Each structure stands twice: as structure tokens, then as C-alpha cells.
Image (cartoon, rainbow, N blue to C red; front, side, top):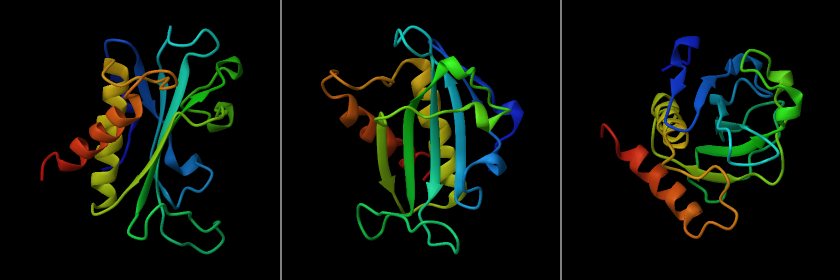
Length: 156
């Protein structure tokens, strides 16, 4: 399942556009890459990024750090510097902020399914079902993991 410009998602609290994976830092490992606009959560930024990358070893790419031996994919969600005017059509305008808001790993699915999982998670953020800023929100990271696990089970 490839992302196209038609994959624009509008939810109750925000919106999301796919980013061309060919422009990702390591396009050969990029499975899904999204730019989300969720205003009003932080006074300092309105944008976030979600990506899923494959953790397979590839020549010329730093070796993946796996949290467990079977891990095949990593999903990451973080704030993006809104002062740089981030745009989905210009990957150079997207500057990740630290620390990462969420990061997790999973396995046992195809890359197409991993891309579908990313879309489910993106939709949960723009619908307001997941908290973009988990710091100080009791259970936010657990809810993210539960949503990831549910997304992995969809259409099984």
C-alpha cells in the first residue's frame, strides 16, 4: 500500500498529509511517513511527524537498534518545529524536536500492513483518540501501545 497525495486525512482535532517516502532520510527503509497538523495542543508547535521504518540491515545504512530480536519495524511520533513552516511536499522543512513523543517496535506483518498500521495511528491522533503530548498524561504511552496492538490485529 503506497501513500499518495489523496491520502489526506481530516479528523476532529487535526489533519495529516503523507510525505513522499522517496524523500525520507533513508528511503529504502521508509514504510510510511506522515506530517500531522494538530493545533492547540502545545503553545510552541502545531505539527507532528509519524514514521514507520523497516529495521532490516541494509548496506550503507546505520545498523538498526532493536529492542527485541524479532523486531522488524519501528514507529516514531514526534513534534516538528512549526517555526520552519513544515510542508509534506518539502521534507527539508520538517525538523524533528526532541525528545520523541512515542517510539515502539513491532513485527510479524508485511510492509503493506505496517503502512496500514501507520495510517490507523495517524487517524487516531487527528481524531483525538491519542494524545500527541504524552508527558504528564497518565496512561498515554500505554494507550499508544494498545492502539498499536489493535491496529496490528485489524483485518487479520
